Length: 298
Image (cartoon, rainbow, N blue to C red; front, side, top):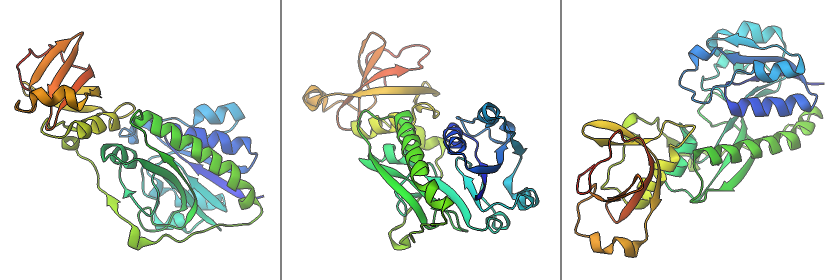
């Protein structure tokens, strides 16, 4: 029976851990960073909540780069790193006899890098996926273990894409673990010539510029919906969170074609109709402390 170590720190990690435990594989350690060093993970999850249900303990750490000696003592064959924002250092990658398996919510080799769920929605992609891969020294560049794709619909927000990623990951784990146990190690080399890298987002990337197209604003808002931090606009030099907008029909916007972007066209039941670069959007869910007046600009 293979020896596995599991490392993770978010809700996705917890669901994968539970699935692996219930497959009765030999998990020799569960590792999770302390919450205080994972403050940038809005969906941080203490894996002890799952481990306790199965009478297992969790080993906590500050940074995985300092844990090579601890891991080496456990003599793992495979290390699962599912939901950890820290980079796995070379001294850890070299320890397992078979390798380290990570995950990336994109169709590798495309869209390597940072914030793949957010960028996929914000860029208006109609499909994406989840890739489980063998971690190497590069960034999301290791051989593919398995991969599944899914559609991104206009009704999707960050949370629903996160759910698709979770469900497909569980399917892949359940289908592929038996092969690992038998020693069948699947590796598909990535074609790096087809790769691109998404950069780290900044707070400015979450700001709505009303000169953007209605569709671009719509996509940005749903990309940053919970569990993420929310898109925002500026009103009276203050940031205001915008959680949901609705696209308006083109014919409804024709009469406002000569109006400047950002102007509040109407107010109704706490909803604001706002001019965009190419039409109108209705702000449905927001955090305005005081509603702008009709005719004001955002």
